[in-house]
Picture (spheres, rainbow, N blue to C red):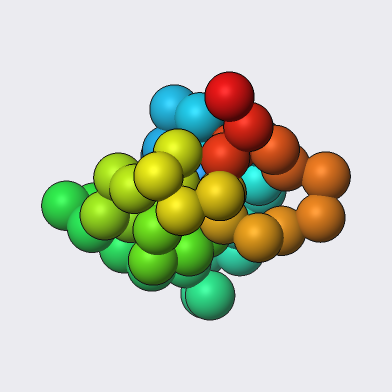
Length: 57
């Protein structure tokens, strides 16, 4: 049986893959950062992870 250890950030604007051990969990969904978890990545210039661009217009 395969164990899932990483998932895409649950933010619809984000491209990050997050380790479930390090994720910020909100309502059972994994997020890569506080700004993605609280839905403000667009207003806060993105999550800050290299190559993501979730804060881009």
